[in-house]
Image 1: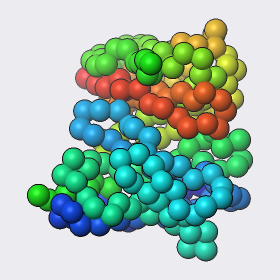
Image 2 (image 1 turned 180 degrees about the vertical axis):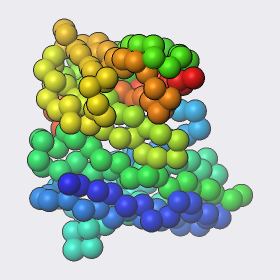
Image 3 (image 1 turned 90 degrees about the vertical axis):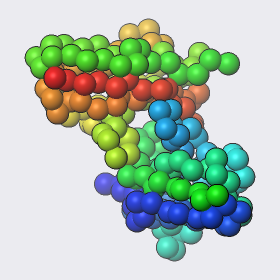
Length: 115
Length: 113
């Protein structure tokens, strides 16, 4: 069975500093990997996904994520954090079994950007 | 264009009652997914449909939970004889094709008293 680990419940970063939100996964085969963001009282919004190809994936709002197969990681990054980036971030994985449709989410990491 | 919509946004019910939660996917989207999200947790997969066919219902917790999508568009998640442990946010998502990016609706907050 697939699983996703987000080892940090919360990440604090100063505005303007680079940020990293960590994610590791366990799955058979070559999965699809995703990041979603949830703002307070809002639904989940898609940020970016990795399917194949270049290990560095660029997404919405200046976010990017780096796929590392050997470390089974898919960390979310942004060069310069904004206060408006403060939200709950979810990493997710979908394995080839089931046609990539059954998505497993991590428990989420709360990002707090300090002015 | 319009995103995924869900109704009601909030539902309060008494233990033992049946509830029906509705999801209206993005127009033309083939696939529809249901998730349940407990407070402080990530969404947990329940079931999904391609067109009107339910492809996987392995995430439904027990036989009180069922879902349908009879015409391949709107879907209903039904919980019979609700229990307090069913209280959660129920989220629906849709994708243009199977395995495409899933886009989520705002969710239905279910509270069982």
